[in-house]
Length: 227
Image (cartoon, rainbow, N blue to C red):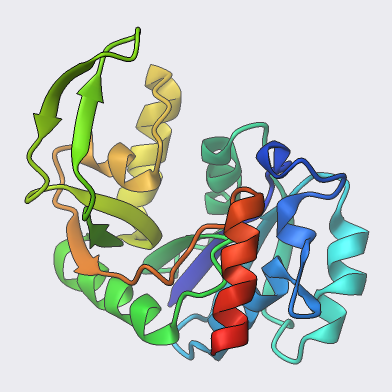
């Protein structure tokens, strides 16, 4: 059994909007609705744990889930004050019969079902698999004053995306250890890496945009118009 955790509990402060970014309209639907639609189309995903702000259950149920034909396998649950806490909350509601957990940002609406499936296959084989894209730009390491220290070789640098898929027992162990040790990672793969476990990469797409600020939203609307 495969369970997806869709993380959509952020406030979207960088978007400078009165509404959280996951609810902003994209081609007539909330961004989150587009993301849920893709996961609903992925037949290997049996359940979706949708982690949202604590007071948003009625809004999500009435404005998003009730308007989607594939929403009956979605469970709403409250998030925390940080992304890592929100994922942990989602993990606590997964039964022991789950084999693979797929974790995805709610504001990455352009992921494809085949990319989700590739991460699932990678997790089944290696224990953990994430989408990522190679770095194309020149990378500079700078100090606190903004002065360049050196240029980083980019041939081994990849930019992590979601989804990130893991064996259920492995990601549970990684999150529990991080909580005990007070470690805060920038993604879930980093928690597994701390266990010296293998995490492999599947090449993703630059279209798999994370909508974080106003410029991202402009790009997202252009991508939909060009589709």
